[in-house]
Amino acid sequence: MGKMILNGEIKERKEIRLDVDDRGYQFGDGIYEVIRIYNGTMFAAEEHLTRLLDSAKKIRISVPYTVAEMAEQLNRLIKEDGIAFGTLYMQFTRGVSARNHAFPGPETNPVYIAYTKNVEYKGKAAAGVKALTEDDIRWLRCDIKSLNLLGNILAKQKASESGCFEAILHRSGRVTEGSSSNVSIVSNGTVLTHPSDNFILNGISRQVMLKLCKENGIPFEEKPFTLDELLNADEVFLTGTTIEVAPVAEIDGKAIGSRKIGKITGKLQQLFEEEIERQCGSLAR
Image 1 (cartoon, rainbow, N blue to C red):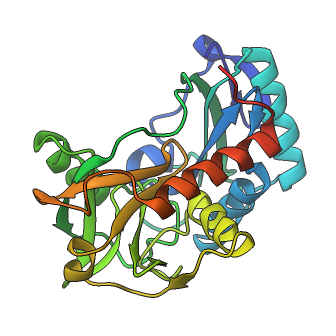
Image 2 (image 1 turned 180 degrees about the vertical axis):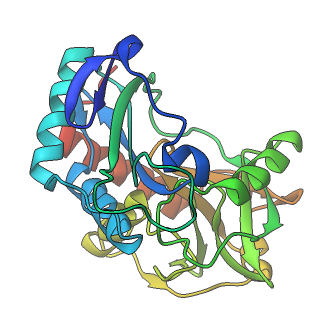
């Protein structure tokens, strides 16, 4: 909204100037997170911030804050911006230096920004979305939540131009994830989702979903599945920070199940909403 964090300080957004020599701008040399806000409270904040530090470590950016310190700064930003329902975006880049592919010297400090955005909360999805399948052309470290999203963007744009909500990606017929979400299927009463290796981002909503499965006796397996298994699944759903648990009704023009929200998907939507309320308070509208 009206304010941002720049290197740990809350400032008026209109007063902030970012340098064109920032390596995030020139190389995509950085990492980011998006956190959902409900009732002025960050959902799964510790998990998001821990993943941020993990991504930073993997690309050798030294973050000068602990999870607790970042959480305190972000909570102040949310309060000062008066955000009840929305999202919080944050990123770290390697910093500002003369353009050179090699890392700059130790005198270059990371650049840290964060800002909020109002997003109306509409509750769990009441109908399934359309998706298409697309080759996964991204790099081989999708476990890092980096600023390099061109492969995701091209897939998402193709989906958008085709009247679809999401592009479900695959590598030679092995389904990985969506362009901006994780994908799971339900087959014979069991939830299947790709293992959390280098081919996918281990989504926080994905992690919450698996925890809810474990706590509520819903069978699940983290194992690869094929395009054929995807298209013939009993249920397909997406998970993500801004979509929570979203059922898929159609893929490549083929109906999934009866096109209606499946039993397990509906149960996970309910459980996910209850988990939000447990962490962030009532969602009554």
